[in-house]
Image 1 (cartoon, helix red, strand yellow):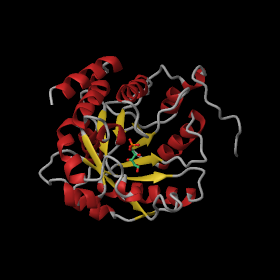
Image 2 (image 1 turned 90 degrees about the vertical axis):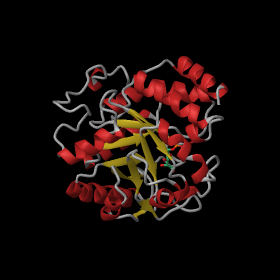
Image 3 (image 1 turned 30 degrees about the horizontal axis):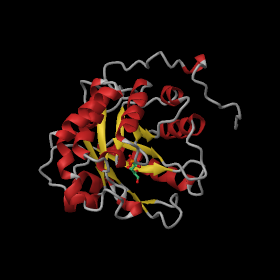
Length: 295
Ligand code: R5P
């Protein structure tokens, strides 16, 4: 029963944006009734003290090849690992360029089948849960292209990961991929995040939007982390992270705005200050400049 009256409004009392969801005994939204193994893995991804995470996304090559700023995974990613909570990448990137001695949790990109040269929603799952376990993944992930040509197939991919992950206690991150023809507004992102959560994903990655990001968060019963999107000036990226956290995001899964910053390690730390300590963007930017000067 499609209903056209779906426009979110940040002042709409039905979203209860100022009423946090009850978490009953576990720090993460919507996760109280999960198995111990799931909770343990989620507690590695999200810092139980702040309840939030800074994930470093470097999976861009799986559709884009050598992305600007990420031409040399082996040179770019390892120096950033100490400053982030979690890594998000492909098995090929990890096996070739990241030391297995790292103790940071890994969110493993499991989808494949399309590149920027063709239809991005035409994906399949290319990495099994057994392989994810062999990689010691803390979570698995795929993207969902709501409203795109391959909507059904990408939802099927997500359902596969959730079903298989549930057998082994491995959580699934559902990513809202937004095609060029879609608007990144609260109505679209709210719909996509809610669909992903209702399918059973344990956390969701989406884009910050305004107005109405608070309604996207309020209507999604699992934690949301934001992607960074295209490279912004550092202060603007910190402002976006701050606004997202202020409106209920549980962290970031940021790529280009960290690894393509003028000083990526300083930027990772500045983003961490916003995410975990809720530093104002201007203070975090001052931290960024201090760290940059001292390197
Ligand atoms: C896209 O290829 C990936 O899903 C990225 O992980 C995602 O877009 C986040 O990276 P960024 O912050 O660069 O948008």
